[in-house]
Amino acid sequence: MIKFNEMKEKLENQLLDEEFSVVYKSGAIPAQYGRYLEVMEAFSELFDKNGEREVALFSAPGRSEIGGNHTDHNHGLVLAAGISLDAIAVASKNDEGIIRIKSAGYPMDTVNCNELEVKECEMGKSQSIIRGITARFKELGYKVGGFDATTASQVLSGSGLSSSAAFEVLVCTMLSHLYNDGKVDPVEVAKISQYSENVYFGKPCGLLDQMACSVGGFVSIDFEDTSKPVVNKIDFDFASSGHSLCIIDTKGSHSDLTDDYAAVRREMEMVAEYFGKKVLREVEKADVIANAGAIAKAVSERAVIRALHYYGENEKVVLQADALSKNDFEAFKKLIIESGFSSYMYNQNVYTQKAGAAQPLSLALCISEQMLKGKGAWRVHGGGFAGTIQAFVPNGMVEEYTAAMKAIFGDDAAYVLSVRPFGGVCIA
Image (cartoon, rainbow, N blue to C red):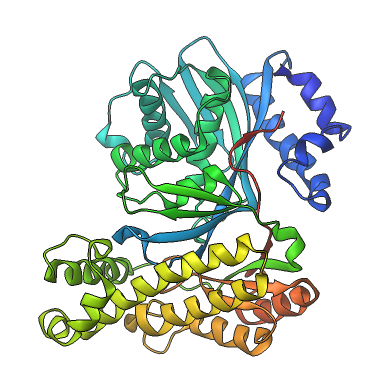
């Protein structure tokens, strides 16, 4: 850590290229100076008008689900990746035992490190996330203490890129480096983040988002034992693939979709219950196929179809990870397309029947196939039913592809990303 004025001078004179190169592509580095100077300016206004406090810079990425659509909730396999869009912060320790975090566009969050019990009135608010993370750090024997921070985020809220998990990992990363010499393991960071969101924020999320944001790069995650997920980082240099990862926001509304999301999980679990089990991971695929007719009568045809999607996705995650490990990007793309068609036909989470003829995701996927067939890959992104699709687009086609998508869904519909090799980090 160095004094505020020294850090500001380094940023103004663009002297942190080496530090930024750890997480940002060389072409993206110049723009980072302006972003970090903005959070520095906010920090100065709120906490350090004289520029004398010692500060550090932090970053945590968003994430993209690459493979394993709707599998984690039934203890399946997932392939995910940290992405180039990130949440950033400047922070400084204080001796008051108070954590103050001011995020751009939001009110100040304040948490007393001596008051870490769950507060019902905070549930659903970012303050509860900070309190829960701090409480869990303390429970696990890590040091906690006060600090002041200002943050900003490029991770789009509601985009399926996990802006909330990026914030959680960012808070963990600050506590880890400010008070624990950066020694808190990325997997532990993910579990702490999930705990905070489950217990303090009040959202029963899985571990996928936090794990991908915390570990970074391509990671395969096996959720057979959710208390001890098996995480494998995949050695693959996405920058050398000749492709860009594009996220297309179709502007479909997520409102009134809770029942659609819940039905996917519930129907899979009902198939498991037919065999006296809780989740599909405890049931063999062959048994579902052998009893398909009886299950369809006891539950529904769609439940059987969704269960078979689940097994197929687990199988494809293994093959996708293997293709990346072998640097076989063409095989990987074919598997992505197969995954997308399974989500469309079998999991049936590309559009909701409630919306009638409104099918923005279907349209985006249809146009993607017309443009990218034989060249790239495309699939629904995240929970589905509305929101975003994902496409792996040859670099030479990115401009043409994104222009087509913007013409349909608006000028702010297309985001061109890269895969970031690291999770939450202290930049400087």
